[in-house]
Length: 631
Ligand code: WT7
Image (cartoon, rainbow, N blue to C red; front, side):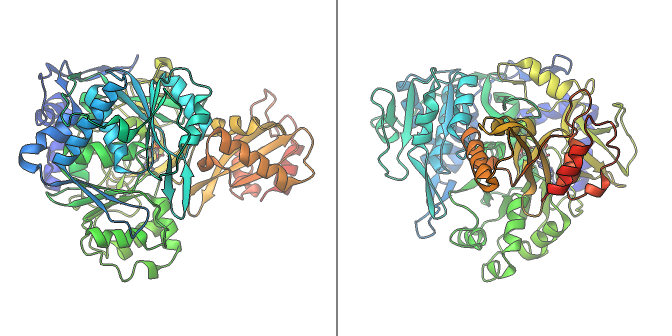
């Protein structure tokens, strides 16, 4: 298969073709996959409705492309390495043949438990290889997986189950996380109190912790696969059949289910994986993300397996047993391509260089980052201390909605500039728009980042609510997909992502809507109203700052804070805990009742002296109280 860009000149040529004749460009790439029936049209789209289709009428199964296709030549090659949380536990190595058999076996188990094409299945799992097996088995039988990150609370799970009307949950008794164990089955049990669509729960025994098992509903993974055939025909899927739903936060309301479909997602996942990381045969590739996020979907599971690569999965955390764990693992498995998040880089940088020393990092060839803007200091540390100045850094900009990497260096082919994502992949047409929606064509400018032509893995809809998809992404600027990010383009046309321009905050690469966190806080009995903003945080990128109004000012502030945190943990999960909670007597509002977040942001950023005009406020005096009580 040749989707490969081989030099920067080749990049420039392919980029040109991808703009002048996108269909020809994507047709050449699309042909390198295994289709049960070929597509008869490359793309058909309009951004008004929106209605976007790729590889029309093609029939395929992504798992045949991930697994079956490799068996003949690569059946004995390593497909998946798993490194346990506990450093003394031995690693798991599965060949393509073994992974294929495990996926088939579990596919048959799913069918036996009543799951079929089109059914939605929630996956709430630890970072164990069975999580990948569960995803692939769903894809093999045409069921739609929706992975929910295992840090989300019972309420967050039940919202997603109900929105997707899922039939099954696949989970584990619990998970290992550093020195701790976290129960998962208990959380699922709590979630299911409010769900009526779930018929079966499959439970993987990860801890041997003997969870509650409800007769007739709950089935052990090992019992479900017992006696199942290790081959299973792959369901022929239409290119535009749904492959998965992944929930993500937006600026309003509850998280929405981003929908990706089979054909286009497959093509873009493999194409972007191979080019961005310049993956070479036999390389060991490690992405440290969790399968609960889009990065785990596209760059732990689908992209690498579609490419016949060896993909590593890590169960634990970067700081257990100590802050050298990542480098120790790179050394142990002789990792060639390493892909992580700026927040992890900053956290490890803060732990001191002694953790990097004494580990052989000479196998590393390409380093990647994703999830949030990387600051220059962290970029340089990564480049010098980890890459020893030898390895290119690919700063990969993309989103849950884009399905794959959009703007990034391509291994060592592209020019590098610290903290810049760089140039768009061939096939991707980013533009910067001004306030009025006019395209800014020059270089050395800043604007709203939009994309003016579809690519194969663009989201197709938000599950069950197409209008929301239209309003969120396609209505801000006519005929453009709006990313929600602001960006700069330098004199050489390289992009630097500045960050979100909407009410979305990015905490350690995890995405939350301010409204989502406010709604959670407001569930607390003490709270009358609240306003949440992001502020710069030296490790997490952004921290969550909550201004909270209570009926009466709590007498014990610490106790009230703890109680509110508990509510947020219950409503969303620990990952959404505000860093700072300030109790205030009122929020700054305009006469029409709109909260002036600009003011709250300035205070949270420690720039209370730069508030600007506050005279239009209903009650300007609340601002003085807020400034006086700020952290
Ligand atoms: C938002 C998307 C894409 C997988 C992980 C996050 C920010 C992502 C970068 C980057 C600067 C980045 C953007 C984007 N973001 N990558 N390389 N440089 N910012 O996925 O949860 O869908 O979040 O993450 O703000 O809009 P997500």
